[in-house]
Length: 112
Image 1: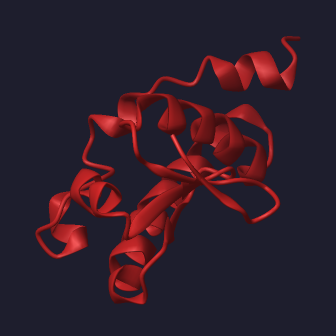
Image 2 (image 1 turned 90 degrees about the horizontal axis):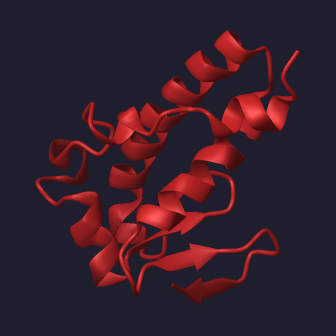
């Protein structure tokens, strides 16, 4: 049996192409625009974080979609949702544009 980490690393990044970051969830603003503005950052656990309270509802919608995908993948792989989120976090961070705010596990923020 393949180790959990190797199985999770094989998770495709197709979620980026299936509308995970639908602009309508961000009140006609794309996730990239929200990240570019500094109002939204990406966290170590695979979820977006609002850095400005005015976009919390958009972040909640984005995270609900992510959580659904993570749960499906976790069920398929027989692992926890948290493990899946952390694997996706690495992929999200690698694809995020320069300047994106990133939250570390200790809660501190750094820019990519």
